[in-house]
Length: 444
Image (cartoon, rainbow, N blue to C red; front, side, top):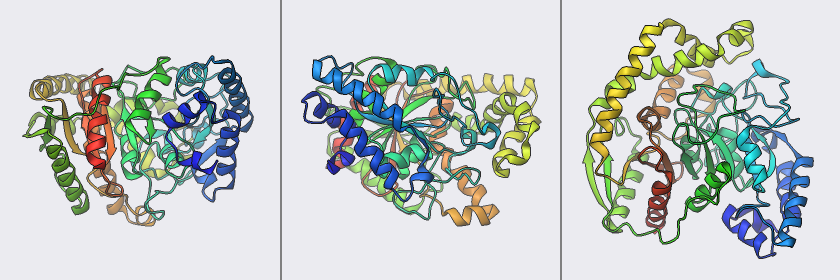
C-alpha cells in the first residue's frame, strides 16, 4: 500500500478501474500518511477526513458497479486554501479571513467532486496569493522538498508540498503571476497554468481577476491533462500518440528571461535544450523587445486590481497582515484609474507583438524560475535579500500571465530547476501533447 503514495494520479486511477486499488483504502492510506507526517501542519491548513472517506466510499461503490465517472474517480486531491469548501475553513492564508467557513464549494471543487475526486483537505499558501516565494509568517510556510531550510515557492506552496512529500497524488492551485509553475519547479513537479478565463473562478478567493487562473500541480504531463478534465467536467485532452519532437520548433526566449540566472539554473536549462535537440526539435533564439515595457506594467496592473479588490478589508485590519504583503497591496493605491486603463492599452499592444513573434513556434521556452529556492531565515532577516528574491522569483512565469498564454513547467532532472513552456492562448491540449514529448526527452 505504501507504493500508492508514490504513484501518479493516472496510475492510481487505472488501479481503481482494474479493481486492484480500493478507493477507501487509498484514502485511508493518504490520510494516515498526512496525520503521521512531521510537516502536516506546515502543509495542510485543514484535513477533511470525513469528507474524504465519504467520497471514497461512493467512488468504491461506483467502481464495483462499473459506473466510474472519470479516469480519476476515487483518486485523492488536495486543494489550495482559496477554493471555497462547504463546512471547512477557507482563509486564503490570511488572518483577514480567519474563521471564514463557506456554505458551498467553489464551482471547480463541485465539478471535480462530481467527477469522483476525493478531497483530502486544504493546503497552506502565501497570504492572499500575493507572493511567489511561499513565505507566510502569518499562517505557515511549507518546506521545499529539496531544501527544508528554503521556501517552497508560492503562492501554491502547500499544494506543491502536498504532492512532493507524498501527501497527495495531485493538488489544485492557482496562478496569477506564476503561483502554480514556481512551486512546481522548485519541488520537481509538473505545473499547468491555464489560460485566463478557461477554468471557473466562481467561489475562488480572488487576487487579480483578469490574471487569476486555476491549475494542477502533479507528477506527470498525463496527470496534468487528466486533472484539467477533472476541473472542467470532461475526460481531459487526448494525449494518445503524442511524444515525437521531430519537426517541432521551439523559441528559446532571450528577452529578460535569461538575465541574472543562477549558474545551476543556467546549466540545467542548457542541458534541457540539448536534450530537446537530440530528440529532433529545432530551437531558435527569440527576442521580443516589447516584453521589457510589458514587464514594467506589472506594478500598475497587478497591484491596482489587487488593492481595488481588497482595500476595504485590508484597511479595516492592516495590522494582522504580513508587512511585506501589506506593502505590496498598498502600492496599488499610487496609481489612478487613468494609469490603469492606459497600462492595459499598452499591454494589449505588447500582446499583439508577442503573438506575431511567436506564431511560427510550437512553444516558447525559458527557465521556469531564474533562481533556486531562497533561504527562509535570510528572507525573514535581510530586507535586500527578500526584495531581490521576490522580484526574480516571479519574473519568468509572469511573462505567460502578461502575454495571456497557457504554460507548463516540467522538471529538468536538476533539483528545483524547471523548464517553462508557453503555448498559445486556449491551446492547453496542444501544449500538453507537446509536453509529453518534452517530458520524455528530459527524462532520457
